[in-house]
Image 1: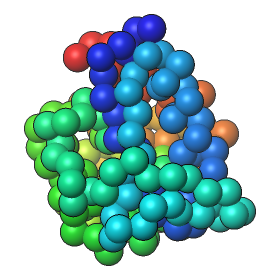
Image 2: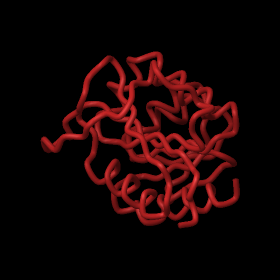
Image 3: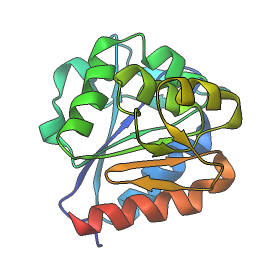
Image 4: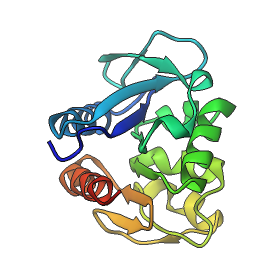
Length: 174
């Protein structure tokens, strides 16, 4: 239970990638963390790319980064929906500014770009959004996990073991 007392936000929107939300969710709970699913726009649940639902614990408008030790952003096409909600973008931006762990996998790099937190940072993502990250000033690398201070990024579901290890490792240091 290395993460007992840690509080984690996992962002959710429609079209999320199932494994990229549920694997970190259960992995962090297994370590003893309190994990909250954070939505935006008032929805009570969201549906994954393959129809799997996730219930929302709280809305982004109702929380602050001070309430969490980390913010995790799963991929799929959900990040394109998430970045349309200023409260979600603000949560990611402010968590990063406060030095909280911000972890993004796959297409979640879109949220990092919208939050304005990748310029000059090392990062990775699903290859199709590499140009978006580079245009926003990131130093993109094709690797299963890239850690740059409080920013943790991975490329795809196959990288989830490394992604989760990096998150747990970062949170055990704080």
